[in-house]
Length: 382
Image 1 (cartoon, rainbow, N blue to C red):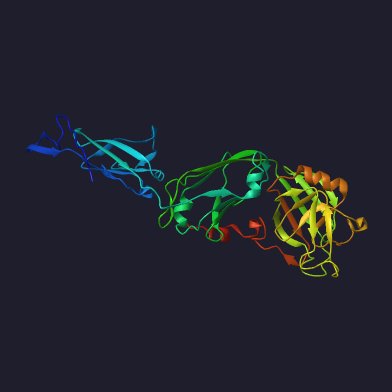
Image 2: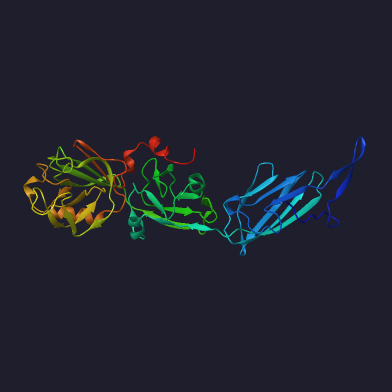
């Protein structure tokens, strides 16, 4: 496992004579072991670097690749050092370690090795809505959604490589949705007005048999104001607060409830994307069928995958503030719809109540429909 030993006087393991009350004794030099060993050509990057000292303690460990230091940590006894993250595939590394025995005799060890070239690789991307809004601000309910181009079977290994740091920290957890998507949600809403950074340290992570990540992935998000909209479809109004201050009360009209499809979902929604205009076509109906429609609707902000928006009313203004007349969306007066559209961020919270149809937790970004305890059960880690 180990290559070179250097003590005070030469290139082989040395012992040092010391004197005790009972007479003379010998103290062997500390034995340092490096894994991967000298000359390894196909080291598994997910195993990292491990340096151990027997009969002494590690004084220093330096691991380098392409002129950069590899971070790592000692155990409490300083008898072991491990690289903090996985190594990069197809990369050459050098390791230098120094240990001392109980009377201060130094031992040195060295290893140079190369990690394997993967047979298959895996890449990750951010949810397209989040990616398309890079540089913008996000709401306090924002999830972090990662999609993989291959199935992930070593979910725990991948999840351990995902690091989320916030300027104003809050507890959060990842949840796997199938084998190709993982979503991060906080226990409570993000604190407003801060930066959040995702670092996916996937280079060298073994996602499945013979499948490795080859590069890290980093994104920074700017959390903006805390915009919370509460929609009461029994009272036919919504109230918008920004950073806890009431900003607007809006007369609205929700789904007419004639069918489940035409019933607005009650629950915690998040704003996702917005379009002006957006084309809305009645699902499951063709032209000439009862209830068919095909319209361009202005100032529309999407809040689910089942076609629900907050948008400008396209007519029936007498319903606003009085009755639920829509096909499932929440209609607003033109002036209010324009204001809401212009000020909305992806991840703003929209809480709707007053209907018989419950929002599903996986309908769009409706992850807040699960309690945090249930959410955490979807993690691959304890």
